[in-house]
Image 1 (tube, one colour):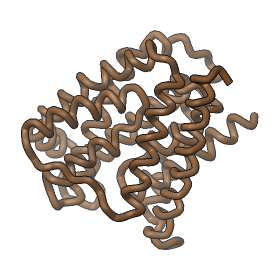
Image 2 (cartoon, helix red, strand yellow; image 1 turned 90 degrees about the horizontal axis):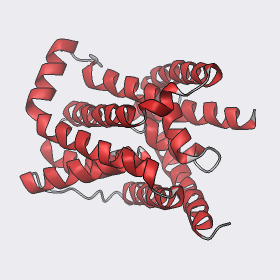
Image 3 (cartoon, helix red, strand yellow; image 1 turned 30 degrees about the horizontal axis):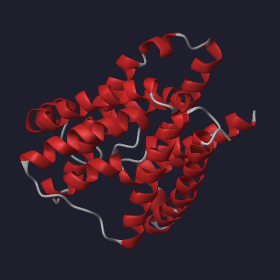
Length: 256
C-alpha cells in the first residue's frame, strides 16, 4: 500500500510538471519510484501512460489552430531522421534494461537527473550546434538512455534547443522522439507487459487517468502557483532524488 501511495504521488507530481512544460513525466516518475520498485518494473508501470502523454503533446492542438493530421505529417516529415535514430537507440537501450545489472542503470539515471537539474538551476543549459553529426549522436545516445532509464529528455534537449526558438516546435519534436522511444520499449518489453496480472493493469489504468488529470491541472497551474516557483521546487526534488538513486546504485554494486 505504501508503494502504491508513492507511485500515485509520483504520477501526480510528474503529471503537473508535464502539463507545465510539455515533458518530464517519465523522468520524474521513474526517479521517484526507482529504488522502491525495480527499475524495469517502474518503467513498465509508466510505459503506456507516458506514451499516451507523449502522443498527445506531439499531435494535440495545445492552443494552436493545427489539427492532428497536420501535426503528424509536419513533424514526422521534417524530423523523421531524429525520430528514427531515437527509435533505434531506444531498442538498444531497452535491451540494456533487460541485460545489465540494475545498479549500473540506477547510477546512469542518477547522473542524468543530477546533471539535468544542476544545469537548469544554474541557468546554463548545454546547447549543441545543429549539425548532422550532433543529430546522429544525440538521437542514438538519447534513445539508448531513454530506452534503458526513460530519461531521454536531458540528452535530447541539448540538440533540440538549437533547431528552433519556437517552444511549440521544441515541445512537439521532443515528444515525437519520446513517443518512438516508448514504442521501442513496448516492442522489447512486450513479453513482460503481457505477463502482467489484472491488478497491475488496473494500476496502469489509474496511473493513466491520474496523469491526464494532473497534466490538465498543470496546464493551468499559473492560476494557483507561479510556474517558475513550481519548476524550481521540482528541480530541487530532482536533486534529492538523484542523490537517492545514486545511493541505491552504489549500494547495489557493493552488494548492500
